Image (spheres, rainbow, N blue to C red):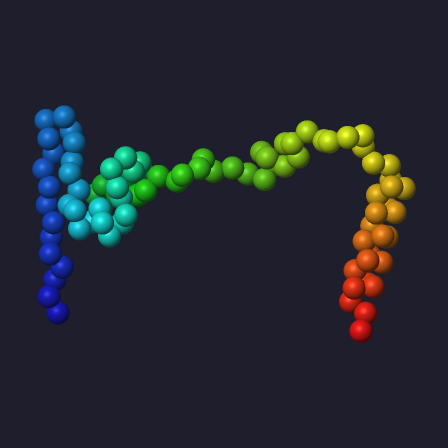
Length: 93
């Protein structure tokens, strides 16, 4: 089995590196793609940067303002009962 071709590149005077076209096409890294650079024990690792910053549920849960007046417990119980009846009626054979 033949060993994979080793691709090389050169660091410019501005510190820029051109990634070989085959790698860019394989990874779908078009111009403007943001990359994360990690220094590892084996060398430098390049990974596509996430499109969105990571978030936790607690950071966004209930972040929208309520619409209208708050419901009472009786109103919530009535809505649950009505939905239960609607689903039960729909699933009858």
